Image (tube, rainbow, N blue to C red):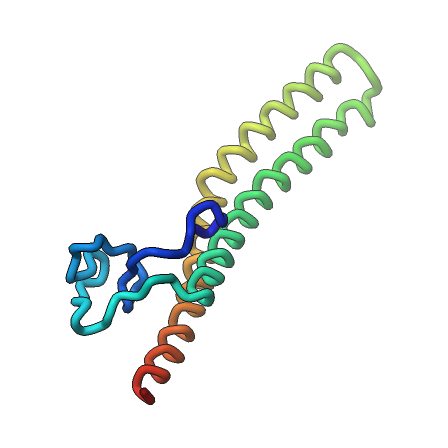
Length: 143
């Protein structure tokens, strides 16, 4: 749904917007009964936007680690060539360092980058979710 390949239509919990089956009367995610908070037919746009921002932040951190590591690797790989000239050992060092930094940046991006990105994305989502719920609940209380 976030990527636009699935429709934002169906039956969703009116509290947390988790998908609900046609026969479900209680949300399996938050436990709220549909009698207490009626189901909705679409996830609100602010919730979808908050999820998009979360995913964007997660990806940004992972890509930063990956590209930062590769940039550092290319830069450091060129050092032997720049200071010692082109010899068999400088070419071997160049390609060896490239492979080393590629593996290092990929592993850092997939471990540290994933963890930091998840935390950042989750905190951004949580603050947007809290604001949305506050506004939604205030609107419900008025009606």
